[in-house]
Length: 199
Image (tube, rainbow, N blue to C red):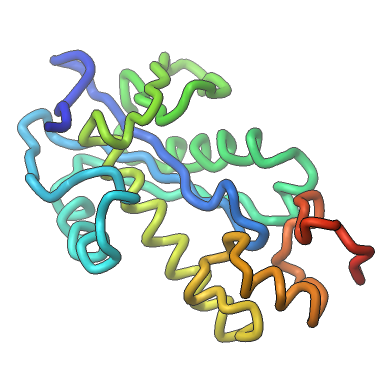
């Protein structure tokens, strides 16, 4: 059972990201502050949920959260600063949009660039331990999936509606046959043998 908070009587925001391991597209992050008495038996790490359940939970989270926000860092920015920094920057962008300032941040993972004037705690596999991080994982994942679905309409050859930009066989085959798009992360190993690509 997921925990409602790390410490009672303070405003905690859970933060998580989606799309870190993708070859294409922006990285998304979400920050969510839930009421201390919030409970939903379906809420879990987004990776443990079906797509249907994730999308069913999104409006529940948005309606019942004290505050929530989504931050985005583009593929171009990822290439400039690296994916780890980009993940933290996406979280920072989500946190700065929250309508309520949290007293503390619960960060999924084991590393984080401190956010100004707010203390944080990193939690390995936190999206399976704390409700607020699980909620953030669902928002980050569903909003990023919507974004990749929209890009799929622009570049259907890469099958982004199915693979969401992750390095599947079909995605890599399309890179080999069609080259890359403006949404590909050029600093990533796009093909195992890293052929010379048409940048």
